[in-house]
Image (cartoon, rainbow, N blue to C red; front, side, top):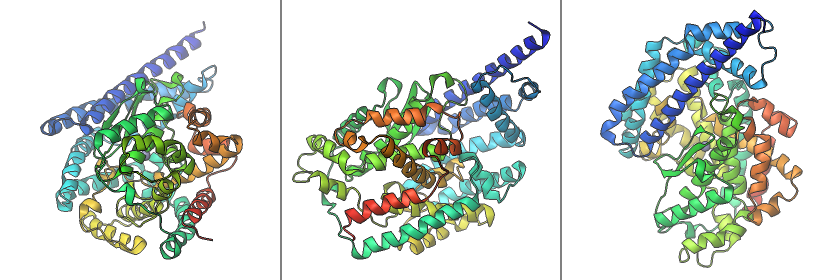
Length: 509
Ligand code: ZN
């Protein structure tokens, strides 16, 4: 072996070891976050936040260390990547991006921010329960300030908000989102109005009532099994705000929320989180232990959860197969309800205040509102003190309804307490990706609709594993959508899908 080859080998080996170490800490941190959100004692949270801060800081230190800089430089020299695997090359590319980004943030600033956001999530939970916006405001102000400083340090490309968007959906800009949301608004708002004016409103009375939590839990577990969720590589728990967390392909946990007076919350929440989990459980195991093991972007991640929740879980075929199973748990409440009635009832369109309970059509309007507010915060310097007022005004304008308190208004989502500004658009991007992907799936699998109606959900899972899941972060969002569908992201597939579905449900000509 020549001297050069030996040096290269040791550089790549040291590089792999360092990224594996960082990824291991990230996995441990994931367990801690999961614990904090699923039942850790409240009194221990402040101290735990210190531990989270310490571990995050260590990861941050390693990822911006001079050793990391030297290894990345050595591996970027001409010829240094010859003979390396595609995984190694992608790993170097992604790590360099993070390195350059993190290097611009002073470590002390970063540590303060991690401790702040870790405490803020608990503060948010309490403020939400009491509908106390003023109680959460001091946290929110600080989190917004930190993000404004980060944007300055990272450097603005396009608009300040673009800098945040890029973290969740690489390459997405305010200009592109303005266009996509503009197209959605043009077709979906008139559809929602037509439904409100002339639609034949489905009966939803059977969805309200008393639904035993244990029975709901049994059905959630049953549904997960049908979808091919691997229980030996995951578990189901309960939390205020449902989420999925992928620690490795062998440990992908989800939570749901059971409401005794609302059957749909856990029903569709569980399917949604399972969509995220199927993605994480089915990444190519060769990517385990690397930062490439996970969803490629938040938009693609949401496309998988929303595809399962809406295009499968809220389809007529699904309920032809599964309503009899649900009736075993709730025979009295669902007596006399047939699959068609259940399908129509669980797809009712109604302007509502809560995003996670919104129907497929108005859901995108909830996202547009958050997108516009975040743009105001970062591109127009809106004072966080005026957030509640801005929020209520937008709901009134877009949906004709106004929250009566902050708990069902500006405090309803967890995202801002964690500093996740720029995340919300991922949900609508996810809806658009999902509609475009399922359009192709239907062409490539002519028996898809029959399969779903027969309870054969695994062929779809298999197809998605092949096209999306297994790639992890090896492909960019744009590459995934173009490879699958042959074109970049379009809004038309979502609009076509929603028009067809809702005109039929509401019997509009
Ligand atoms: Zn989701």
